[in-house]
Image (tube, rainbow, N blue to C red; front, side):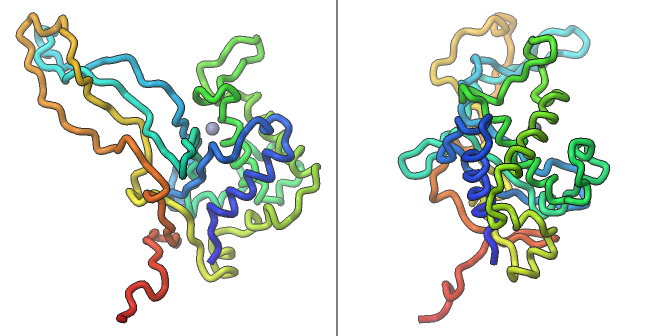
Length: 275
Ligand SMILES: [Zn+2]
């Protein structure tokens, strides 16, 4: 079977070697993993998740009485934090998730990328565009998602500007013009069914907590500061621990087989054979 996330990781290595704008990326800072998403459903093909954002300022949730507008109830103070993901001694800075089988089945037709590519029949370029798009979200300062300048030189509130899409298309051309080995990107040329048939199946790395993965989580402040609202006799909710974990290591990764309808953990052959 083909391991799709392994192939994507090798492709990422090749792209950052050949595309000047992305050459600051150390691939060891980036972990590629797969999520499940149907091809015929709306949703992202891929997402760049930043793990380097600092904790939020302390805060709390509160509820108001509808009539009086008075705060009646609040949570305890908490901060929102990024989880720590380590592979060996190395702390990962960015996760890039690819949605299977949806990512494999995307095409340029009717997409906002179509106008950037002359050879619109080369549908697989949409996938290369997505890989470069997600890499371009990595901030050179590594403190979050890349901030974008608008045409008047100010920072945009959005992380997708028209220039962003055009710059990604330029990097796709730069990569292809550098004459990469076809074996680096050939796997993108097949849709999910064709690739699955060619290799006898598609597997990919995911987190054992599937479908969950490392995400920002809330942590109760050990020392609860005084709160203005409490003077009014506000009820403080008991703390419910977050479902998201603070720490992930390589032991939290596993390989899953993806099909068009579902995904399941890939059990190594012979693992359950009687002794
Ligand atoms: Zn994006």
